[in-house]
Amino acid sequence: MPIFPNVRCVLFDLDGTLIDSAPDLGLAADEMRIARGMPSLPLDVYRSMAGAGARGMLGVAFGLTPQDADFGVLREEFLSNYERRMTYSTRAFAGVEELLSALRARGLSWGVVTNKAERFTLPLTATMPLFTDAVTIVSGDTTPHAKPHPAPVFEAMRRAGVQPEHCIYVGDDERDVIAGKSAGTGTVAAGYGYLGSVGDLAAWQADAIINSPDELLNLLD
Image 1 (cartoon, rainbow, N blue to C red):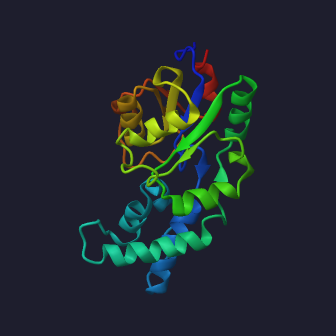
Image 2 (cartoon, rainbow, N blue to C red):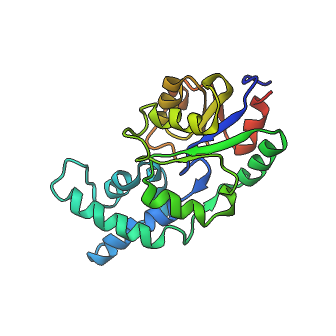
């Protein structure tokens, strides 16, 4: 049953919602382990934390946090590794292309709001035909604030020319739900995404939860 009447624009998080970038993110960190004579880790170990970017990958690979003295240097090494290989294995999640086609067929616009820096977001999306008709792509450093601050969502709506009551935001992290709610949009948790270390997805209090991209269509009028 539709719970989002009068939607004109759907905004999506990027990693873990539209695209599966975990292989490239994980291998960028794993290369660092191998270079230091440490054993490789399975991709599944990295996957759940892929949405946390460098912080998540270095946490898995080396048990580091941003408070550790070596974090800054290793973060730059990780980002260089990722920048070199970020298009190798990254693909749209199954069903995403069909979902976006269905949104177009309904006359709805769509865009991206991600915490990924423009340094990576713009080159990556430029290589994927999937993003050709996105009305906006807002990165983590497009505005002075990143999610969970609502500023990136407000900027995306400004560019798309829509008001919050005509927009929903879909993401696989609690910060996406917080940002969407703070910006006044409807919110949808992507239960098929990375989800970090979440225990109870319902605790995010999104307006809806979907377990595959196509389920989003059931929520729209």
